[in-house]
Image (cartoon, rainbow, N blue to C red):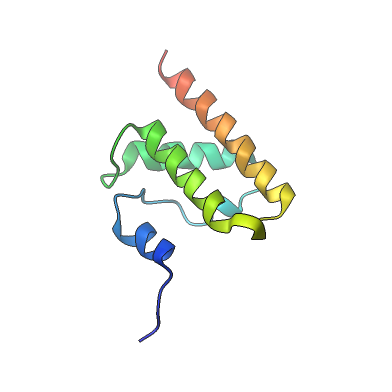
Length: 93
């Protein structure tokens, strides 16, 4: 029986979001944020607000990649956090 990483188990069976395929491989921080926002607003598996859930998944991904995440990729994902905050702020108006 193959062993799965605990992070894969968390992603598949927790109250994590149902993510669009390839969301974290996109090069555009705004596209990543938009995808996470869509997932958070439509997911039945989340706890908390859509912003909390989307930000939590993004942070989870960054943390799991750890030191293996190239600096440029980390910058893109960190920029996606700012885009995500901006998207949710705009939708609150």
